[in-house]
Image 1: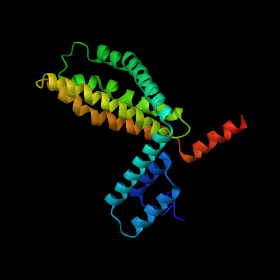
Image 2: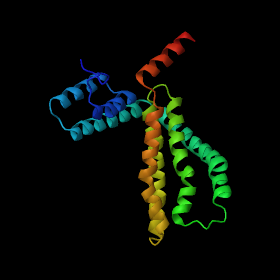
Image 3: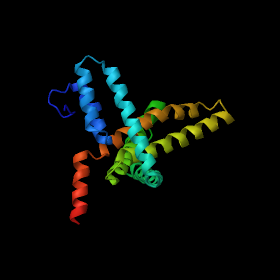
Image 4: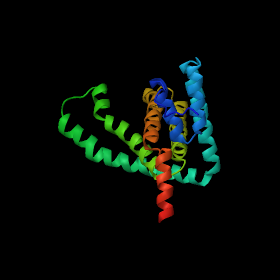
Length: 207
C-alpha cells in the first residue's frame, strides 16, 4: 500500500496528506489519493477529496464525543480570553505606549500596532486547545472555531441590522475569515499526529 509518508510523494501533496494523518483519517485514504494523483488526477480534485475527508472525520469525532466538544468550546473561550489578556498587557500595550506614543497613527498604523491582539490569541488558543486532547484534538478545536464564527458573525450581523451605516461592523465581519484561518492553523499545528497519540496511550497504560 502507498502511504502519505512515501518518499516519492509529490511536494504538492505532502501538506494535504499530513492534514489527513493529523485529523485521524485512514492511512489507506492517503495511499489512494497518491495513486490517483499518479494516475493523472488534478491537484484541485485531490484537495477536494482531502477537504471532504477531513470534514467527515471532524463531524464523526464530534458526534461520538459530544460532551467533550461542549467542554472544548468552554475551554477554548477561556484560553482565548486568557491569551488575549496576556498578549495585550505584555505585548500590545507596551508596543503602543513605548514605540508609537504621540506619533499620530493613522488607521493602518493603529491596525499594525494592534496586530499582536489580532494574530497571537486565535493561533495560541487553538494550539493549546488541540494539545490538551490526546484524541480527536483537531475536531475538538473545530468545535471551538465554529462557536467563534457563529457568535462573531451573528453579533456583527445583528449590529448591521440595527444600523447598516456602521462601516466598522463590516470590517469586523470581514475579519471573521482571517481569524478563522488563524485558528485552523493553530489547531493543525497543535493536533497530535498518530505517533504522538500512540505515545500518549502507551504512557497512560504504563501509569
